[in-house]
Image 1 (cartoon, helix red, strand yellow):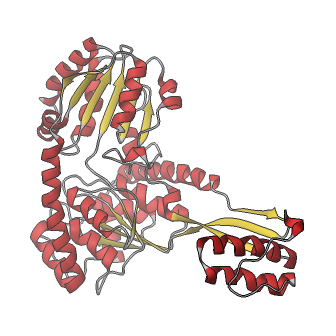
Image 2 (tube, rainbow, N blue to C red):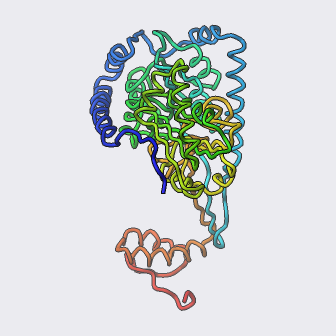
Image 3 (cartoon, helix red, strand yellow):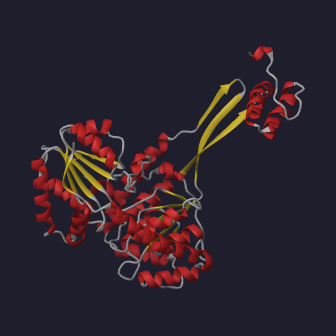
Length: 441
């Protein structure tokens, strides 16, 4: 049985925080519903100290932001976007329409239809997280979404040049400088100046995540997102320093970001905890990472690799870094995770920023039932049917008639019966079950 050398904060305390956030978000969304742009403007001024006549950037303003970046920075963005686009295109190519004659004269099929409009949120109040523009805007465009609107908060009192450049280079049709609840509410509900979208995607803080949760149903969302999570699965093939770096690299996301070490080696566990303390004193973002580690960090020692596998599936973490003597065994056997990072040569940061897989991933155990954002999330798989012959319509209709009457749905049955009469030549009494012919038995 696994032993805990370090525990994280009690879940009941986190639930109390969630309840407070829910109330604030519910009131804010109701205000946007009632007052539109006026409510959005008040929230932007209150929470971000940001106001302007039109929150949408003009073409000239976008070009000015792009011009602020160095050639090297732009080339780095192009490289990252090329990797994300390439993998999204590979995934898109795997999704094929189907059409098959399943019975003589009966054609069934499905096709993948892109959504008409998507709103992409790019977090940027604390750090200008331009990578989220690649992951959302670009992937939506690969899927064929016609209109992609994107919002990011101001950074240091102005549009963040790197975010704007990434949004533009990824193919955004509309770029707004708006953050938080007001951005999510404006895109989902619509205002006088911002058209409503069909789906919301992108990570954000607790208020953004809660706003998406409350709006789900009115619009689609990518997934229910919580704070960034990371799980490092390691054995004695690696050392405490690399484990500590990988834990703290994700803990810097925010003070409530869980970072967990799961290992078969108590020696590695204790070495990692020592290295964490050493590195926290060196990190420029050490204050945030320290709070996350102290409040939500965990260190777990398992009996063996099978015990690690079982515990990892129970945790169902967003990011899972695997550094063991059997990395592919975890790939073959692990079932609950947002994304796997196999071996010490890769890491979560590669996935977050540049390697090509999407970084918008399930948190809070949602990996038990969903994967992360990918090109398929922007596509609706819709079925269709055709019946090409009279004989096929009459044959299916007779079965359908009887099955409908078993359920007591006489109106449904009559939809079948009228076709049995017209295409099969049988005199079926209206609103009754079609009797089975001896030939059917």
